Image 1 (spheres, rainbow, N blue to C red):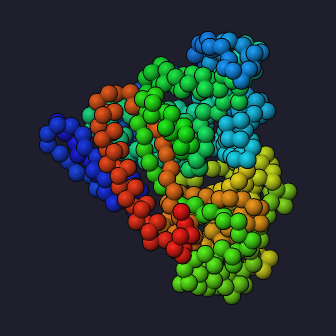
Image 2: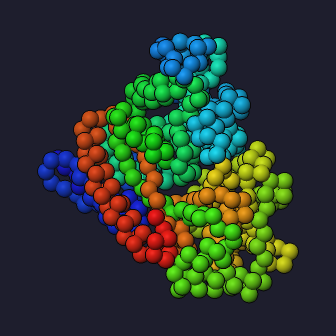
Length: 466
């Protein structure tokens, strides 16, 4: 018995064949993606899993002696547990792990207790939406938290931005269940950052290894098909390969700040035709009597979030069909994240007609969501609100990078160049692991080829982009 699948890992790659089995084959096309989801999600039996009700102990682990850097007061034993809500961990403890993992200069707002708790408290990432929090916590004998892992038990593959629908369909065709699975990620957020968040002690590497082992043990305990760590750092990605995880590569588009003093200085690094096009696009905004504003922190009122939610729903209803985030999420997140939130608004007269949501990190501006008033159209407003205003803000705030979200080759001609993203996949079934590994080898080769082609045809002058 055999199945040959073909599924595009991203819109620009075309078809990447996904082979299963030993003899005859069936061919799946790009238009079959939605069928994959329906069959895998709602047909056949599910694996029986009992998630942690509140706190689940995964046991104690003994640490070896501290290295030469000291930390003689660090206890020798740590306990590992699973909590069913981030509310079981104090914001200070969680954020201390997050900040130590990223460093203050690379602060990642999506890893903060404020952002993640907003997802749970608002009903956006909860059991009812297929995201059951199962966060892993490492504590020493004095109840000091040494590490945390944002982890979810999932009943589907929505909101991940690393697509495994063909894998789920293959399991289904073999009479096996792909769901539930464990997902280590920030829900609905394709942003790279550390996933195993460990305090900066002399036992840091040991705690990291123990937390990874705990995730793998939990996958076995829950009898899930797989464990996925999406958008980890490059450093984590390489470490996890040594621990039995399959490696996957994706691609996004980021803008880099070369110490520009203003937008025009950035434009001077571009080829003349691209520079002219961007200037024309920006001029059309004012010609349509649209005014752009950037609001931050306390400048963003409750009415702004209500308006933005209307825009967000207009986008999801027209493009995706599913709104992952609730209205309450935006209000909670805005209140908790403060000046780390930047909302770009477009006004015609006294009316807000469009907006783009960004979060500000230590050295990066993260563009996340966009929407406009239903039934309206303004030429080039999407480019202005999402890309050019973000560049203006990054230059003003002296940030090194703008990450403009997933997909979109149109970003290249506006100064956003392709960069690799990573994910790691622990497949419990050895046969499927070998097959998926083969698929990923071929997919990675295509991603690298496409990235090279796109970089060679970029909008910058020779020797500017490297």
